Image (cartoon, rainbow, N blue to C red):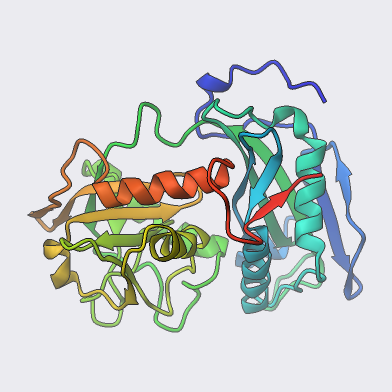
Amino acid sequence: MEKKNIDWGSLGFGYVKTDFRYVSNFKDGKWDDGAIVTDDTITISECAGVLQYAQTVFEGLKAYTTEDGHIVTFRPDLNAERINNSAARLEIPVLPEGRFIDAVTKTVKANENVVPPYGSGATLYIRPYIFGVNPVIGVKPADEYQFRIFTTPVGPYFKGGAKPITIKVSDFDRAAPHGTGHIKAGLNYAMSLHAIVTAHHEGFDENMYLDPATRTKVEETGGANFLFVTKDGKVVTPKSDSILPSITRRSLVYVAKEYLGLEVEEREVLFSEVKDFAECGLCGTAAVISPVGKIVDHGNEICLPSGMQEMGPVTKKLYDTLTGIQMGRIEAPKGWIHVIE
């Protein structure tokens, strides 16, 4: 399939409509077979469950063109597992076995002409999501749902290189101790919007959320997990039941241990420890790792030794190794790369 005439190098990280998307409906207790369609509009009742009670979950992953010319996705089995865990928590019917990966494969294949070429710095972002569609006025789960996937070509998250960012310790809580912080639900991200707008207004790039119970432990940001590096090169990631199990973080932990031979600790991280770390990064699908150079706690500045000019050395090795695996330059662990045939 001939590629569309797109200036791949000028793409930002935003929505660009593509030709095809996937749609499947849940009605009368079962999911239909689903299909690839061209219509990008959605018509639902004004009283739809998603509009009244935010009954929606979603995922985010990418398709890449590898060095040898294949189109692949990265660990979609983990996205499939996570969207079903998220759905179950919000009383949304889970997807049938194998449906998620099959739908992703079909959607990417249909939009093959907008998968950016290798070396362009761009990728195809994939957004699967499920939402309640039938009218619901009493507080209860919907009876009918729609599962959709759309794609959009995106440029590199950091144009001109990943420069370290400045973040603030937020006065807001991201999630409750026994709430929904561990699932990928739209409602969690809605709760973070005021906090991120406030942070931007104050001149910061992101928030650091502390645990809501004691406000002494590092949790995550509005849409990414934290990763720290100690001064002796140990990788440390916060462990909590109320943070999202990031697929990127889990992959970086494996890369640190098995590819780079680094010691890794997944544990509770006290905020009081942060001043003693050498490097800090935010892990997520969009950027892989966003380096952090400065953390501000109500006027008290914590300046990471890695500085404000570039990624720290360990963070850079992690970033280069994981992106090398994703792009086919480095051999991947078994099962990590799903080839779109």
